[in-house]
Length: 349
Image 1 (cartoon, rainbow, N blue to C red):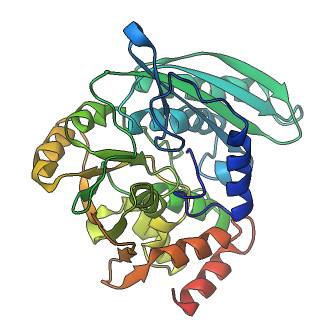
Image 2 (image 1 turned 90 degrees about the horizontal axis):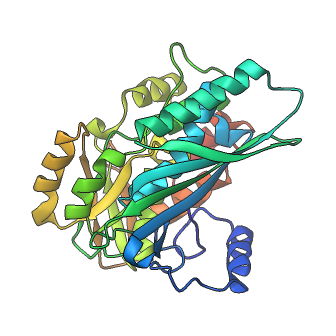
């Protein structure tokens, strides 16, 4: 979830300034291939050893863990958030390290085992292993994962390379993460059945290496991802959200809250799909290759030469995204989220 003041619209001005200030005194590695914030994972040239992709992500207690309702789910999510960044640069995962900050009075040995099992089984799902990490006591719970992967030298994919007229596709249904997080914080329930276990789309890597021109994961929501991909390339975008693009849980949660489904694309609990820009001439072949990997790609819009950032929702209404996402970002997930969201919708965007 790499961020920058220019291309990550939901960041506050203060946060943007801090990120840039931190980088200001850092010496750039001569091995680094991507410029600052141009990729979900950093890409390093190791010479004869090939290319290394590396990324790190932290989940803090509270809203960021609202989609993980059990220790097992927390472990699974901790691994998934960083491996998803590898998938966005079409890297093959090699290993994951995990750092845990735990409250000493809130974790039992059995819960710790379940966290470890969730983290390990997610890694195995992605073809790698947890190889180490760090554990500390703290007043607030948080989990950090660092994922490492390899990239074929001739197959670099990052957020750059999109052009006007390129189509926008996503590797699967959207909105599940936002629906699960919203249900937990605003509707007071976690739902029946098994916890939500999102998957990093590592199976998409080979097709995307062949066909995609730029890529970003949707861990911060589809609309934020589309804005980021467009702005880092100096482009605009029109995102089209048809009924079939939503995950099944979205309709159930939206209906119970009396909200439009597009809200599930606008918040930041994303679903870890990959949003990619592609030449329309290659779109069909790429979709077929992704389908063969068990994925369900959807066409969700296109990039344009101008600065417009627009969404066409499931009702056909056009909405300007800069203002909409800024206002969505300002909502407090720990506050009266449902009331505030309804007020925002009543005001219009």
